[in-house]
Structure formats: structure tokens, C-alpha cells
Length: 421
Image (cartoon, rainbow, N blue to C red; front, top):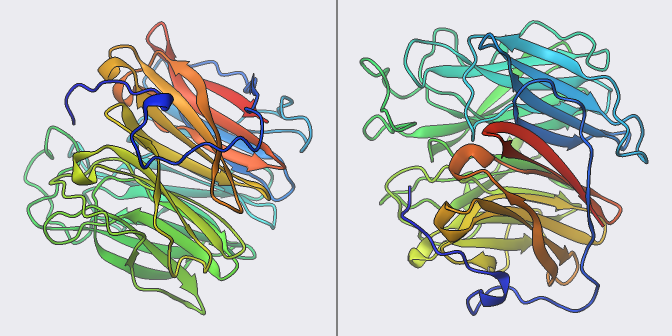
């Protein structure tokens, strides 16, 4: 998508990038053993459960060409290295597997688990939709898949975010293409196209404890076609962040919040003014605690690749001016955020030597009160290049963070994990 880049080390970051503060010593990175995986594995998803454990899901590719969505949970909150039994959520040969549009899992307060994956809904290269399932027995069995997109729909539906909307109720948001005309023949060879001036939209729905869709909302009528969405829960309701598509092909980050039974109108987190005639495939990240919301996003405004971070103290109504946590031609973005009582944790990917020497997974620890970057360092050197590294996943609790990512070993994808304290 961009030309060759020069890797830029942390000590050479341009003026304007967030400064480190010497308040604390550098964090310690330790390997995190993950559950056994018997096939090439990608697309990790890592979430916290209401009882304080970790839930890890991933996609395996079987020798017969089928894919399977697998899940495991740590046995208790304290022993992060002790995993329970691994279960299969679903498997099939009609899946759409994409490095950026990945499955998710979630555990609700009532003990139920929900998961989604993508499966084909037509013969076109990018005809796919969303399959949603629920488990009431800790993942031992799963419901029949619910089709999220309209019956008979083609084109692409995905880039899902999930949250607990109310006790026992799932909230789900996705990018929706129902207003696009079905293309004649295959879609564009280079990925998700825009079908002329038809715009991808953002929609959301809720699903009851019995798996029934209860209400659905249109949230935004013009978004990027293939940038990830993200969600966090504030004291005033869930906030969704995503990349908009404004007139003139401006691709800035937007936010909506559900409050008092309705969704707010879309607003820009910050007006970067990034003009890009295509989808960057590089969505924003969000984390929240009470009424404080942090949003991180990638932009190339002013032709400068940059990973920016902004804070709101009013549940996303307004944001302070952003700061750049990383800048330079090596910055890839693909940001993930997590928050605990004291820190905000931000992870992202950078290229080495224009991608020829693989990639690096970076992590910054930020003071949740002042917003100062306490420490920033490389967590892992990756052999993967380009899209092969996918999207990392990050969670945090009690001053400790957990990271999971995809790398390559002998050209085969594998998942790796680390804990940071």
C-alpha cells in the first residue's frame, strides 16, 4: 500500500512525539505459554472474563482446507499459564478468512459466551457475512449460527465489535454493505472495493439471552470499507470507534456512544484531515474506565505516518489534543489499547528496513492520570512481514498486561504470547 520505508528507532522519533518520563523503571517482558495448537494458527482474540480470567480464541487451518475457531480459558485469575480444556466453537470449509477481519469472542456477566466468524454468502471473492453463536455451558456446546446480515444479502459484512449491552444482552456492531449494488462477477482483485460511490455503513444490533435479535440501528452512513472497529464501556454507555469516510476521501477516526436508549451522532475524535482514496485497513483502538476514554489511531495526515493517542474525560463528548506515540516511515499502526487502574497500555507494529527485516511489536505504558508515556520498548522481533503478522491483542489488569500476536516459523503461522509487568 505504501512504498519502502526506513525503520526509525525510538530514540530518533521526530519532535512532537510523546516524551518518556523517568517515573518508573522499564517494564519486564516474560513469555506467556499459550494453549497447545495442533495446526497453523492465526487471528487471535484475547478478552477478560467477568470472573477475572482470560479467554483466548484463534483460527486453525486444517489439512483438508477447513478452518476451525478454537477457544481456551485460564483456569483461574492468578495462574495465567494454566489453561483449561480447548474447545472448538465451529469449523467449516465455507469460511472467509482474512488477516484484518477476524473472529471475536466475549463472556457476559451471566456466564454465557458469544463468538462470531465470517462465512461466504455468495460466489464473489468478497461475498461474505457474519455468523454469530452463543454458548450457555462454558463453551462445551454452541447454538446454531445466527446470520447477522440480511437474508439473501451478498457483498461484505464484517469488522465486528461485541460488548455487553445489558445483563444477558449482547451488543454487536459491524460494517454493512447492504446499500451497495451486487457486482457483476468477482469483486476487485486487490481487496475490498468501493463499488463506485456506494459507501460502507456502520450498524449495530442487540441479541437477547435466547439469541434473538431485539433491535437494530444505523449508526453512520459513510465509513471506510475495511478498517477494524473497536468498542469500550464507559460509565455512560458503550463507545464505538471506527474510521469514517468524509467528502473528499477524508479518513479520520469517529466515535458514537449509546446513552439513554439511543446512539449519539458520529463525531470526529480529532480532525486530522487525512485524505486517502482507499481503505487503509488500519482501524482505531479504544479503552475506557468510568468516564475516561482513550482512543489510539493510525494516520498519514501531512504525509507523516503516525500513531496518535487522545484522551476524553467526559465519555467521549470531547477529546484533548492528541499526542504522537510513534512517528516515522516504519510505523505500521494496527494499534491495540488496554487500561487498568494506573496505566494505559498501547501496542502497535513497526517495520524494520522497509519490511525486509521483518517487524517489531512495540508496547508503551502510559500514566493513566497524567497521560505521560512512562516507558516504550520492543516486546518481540517478528519474522513475519506485511499482513502475515495480522493484528495483535492486548489486555491489562492490576499493573500487568498480556499480549498475543501472530508470527511465522518455517513460513507457517503460529501464535505467541507475553506478559508484561
